[in-house]
Image (cartoon, rainbow, N blue to C red; front, top):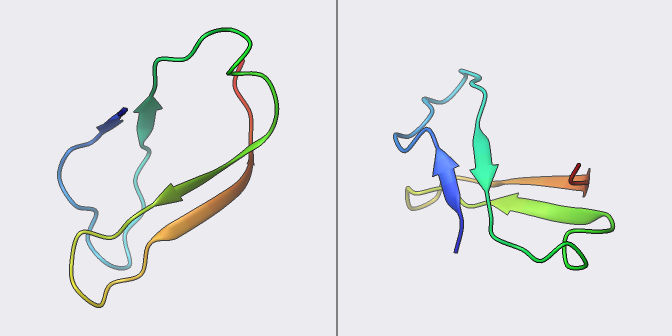
Length: 55
């Protein structure tokens, strides 16, 4: 499981920088990934980000 900051919801229509931190071995962190952020409210849509890479 990872850590997502901020821990509070982002209001609809607003934007905010988030930080996602995960533990992974160096060989696991290589490649391109899809990051899916789930909405916390019923009926709300989440966000899917394609092409996520790690330094």
